[in-house]
Image (cartoon, rainbow over all chains, first blue to last red; front, side, top):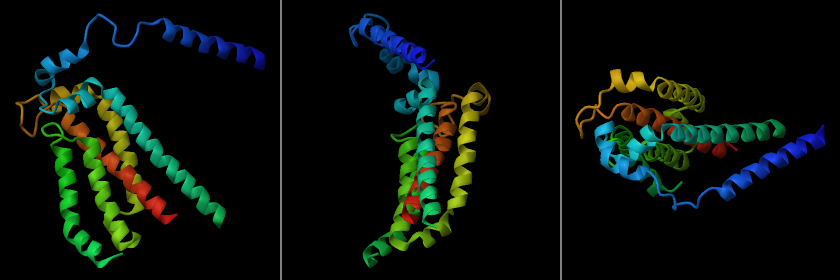
Length: 90
Length: 131
């Protein structure tokens, strides 16, 4: 059972490695560039004068939600560590 | 702490909080946003806690209150993201640029996210000072 799991993990990792290795080089892709779209259309799309804010909370909203989750988890981790330390001292 | 730090903190504390709230509410108009505004508010509370001690800082916001508010605000943030189309089309219009009540959901998300950032950092500061 354990060896099957090990082989499965190895296969998945190898697949990811091959996929990254064979995908095109970063920046060499001749396709649509999304940055120009932001510069030209973000003001009309969102009505926000601060383009950074409009990207962070509109175009990349779920990324920012993940960032807030990281912060929430950090506070939770500190709380857990401190509470465990207090309990042990008593 | 030092008398200099105490005096400066006593005079400056309301303005630090005001500046943080201003940055939160103008995140879609001027540089800044949820994270800088939240950090400024949290640093004001941290300054109070360092100069006057934890007791005085907990008179402004208690640790339990920070817990509850952080959880509620995180729930609210997820709800706003889930019902984003309702907020952006019905609650807050696109409006004209450089008006306060504009920019669809960005205004609301900035305020709510900044509150969550400030509560999390206040909680971390309080817990580490208690330790």
